[in-house]
Image (tube, rainbow over all chains, first blue to last red; front, side):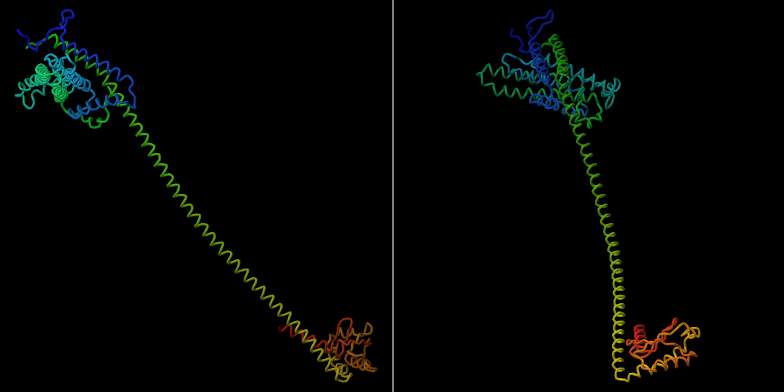
Length: 234
Length: 244
């Protein structure tokens, strides 16, 4: 019986814990990102070099996106949204490396990210509105909507999972099928398209996470317009 | 399709750890340096604003100073003009005064000159009159230069104060000056004539004085009685000079 391409086989075990390929690739991505971040931010100066300029552009773009979406100071959400975006982007693009399957092409990774967004939505919602205020949002606009709002919380988390999983997995499948049927260079345009798809999916995942968290946090931070040019360093 | 829960859990932990790592080593340092740069930029802007305000303050002060200087300059010019006007008026007054003084002095000098000239003219006229009279008298007989003046001399003596008349001849001979040398008997006749006036004939000491032109002069210790042309001419000249 042929195994499903969606099934995961452990590469090795750490004690009782089976370690699968997405986990190993994720560790590699974590290591690479950690090293890059440590090395790139080791000598930050007021007059930036090329690399620092790129980093600052990345951070200010993420901040602007969060600010535009949530109408709030982006500092508390920067690390979560920025990390999700970077990780999903690099994970999606890791398919370019021969023999590597992107972790986001597996349901577990996408589910893990969606769970984190789900938990963050609840945590930021309670933090922003208080427990009663956050729970009260489920009764909006009427208490009749409580079941639907609860279902919405679940379904949109699933939609996050499925959207990312479906797009990345389909891209990997298509490239794999074309690669198996045609020559080595034929799937290159599809791989380029896959790059674009990966970037778009990373952006969509990050923006949706921002929207969900922003909806949970609620009211607009009145001070955000004044802080727009002053990102919080905390 | 099945879910590998171990993988799901590990990936969740991995994502959380990655979020912490990137927050600590990427987002926080980069956002901090951005904030520092913005703070530095704001500080520079504040400093520039402060410098601009300081510059404007200095410029305003300079403008006020310039205006004050201009006002002071204008005031000094006005004061100088006023002082110049005063000085001009003073100099004009002084000039007028000097001119008036010079004019008055000139007038006085002119009058003095005119008086001097009149006096000289009078003297010349007197001299000329004396010359004319002398020339005319030269044509007359010699006795006319004396005899015609004896009565006048006696009348003049008669008009002297009593005390003066009494003293004539009491202290010795009195001097009788005649325009020409007296002939014999003429001195006697004159003494007798005077004796009719004085009550006694005085002793005479006769002297010749051609400057008298014509006539007699009697000199006593206390008076001189003149009755001759020279005295008349002098009197006329004095009168002329006084009227001038």
